[in-house]
Length: 226
Image 1: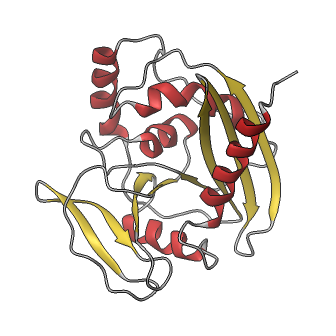
Image 2: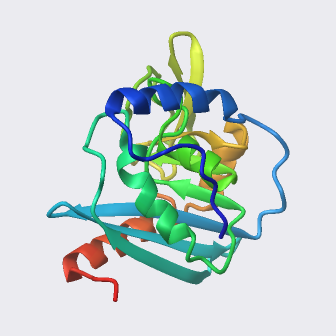
Image 3: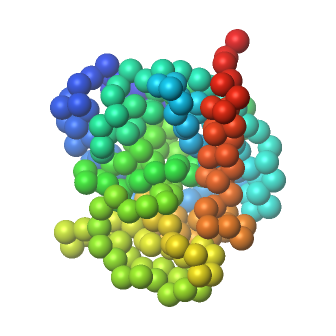
């Protein structure tokens, strides 16, 4: 899979913020989706200062797994709240370059526009991959909302400073909702719709849930690239 080089990764936190402020103007918050044949989930697990990254691709809509790839590496950027993509981005790009099947939609375990500067990891990676992406987070980073109803598909808008930045979505009856936001090249309505389509009876949609399990297994086994 081809990736883009939009900036240097050898930056300070202050420089990283300036890059975010520049890139957020390039994030697309709508547009017509291509035919969705393949969806992917991506995640990273950290153990002892080492990152274990994985991507799993599924056929859509039956969610049959067709490919999984992984990579291991150490970060060159510290952990700084709001700058997660600068810590995890290089390793995620390394994994995506190994894919033989190009996904049409990519789910990230993190925020998209539901971020103080409106460019969380899902948005940043969407720009670098030039693909529609969805932020699918387990918890809220910023914003206010009213609790959605308890039924599957219940939803409420997540808003910050008068702007809608995401949707609080109930993927399973009577379980805690998740926080869905636009990554890149997708509308919030389509992001919520596809998240529900990729939910298979669990709180977390299958692409990100299995990617999360995969990278935890890699970290637990202390996998090493040859």
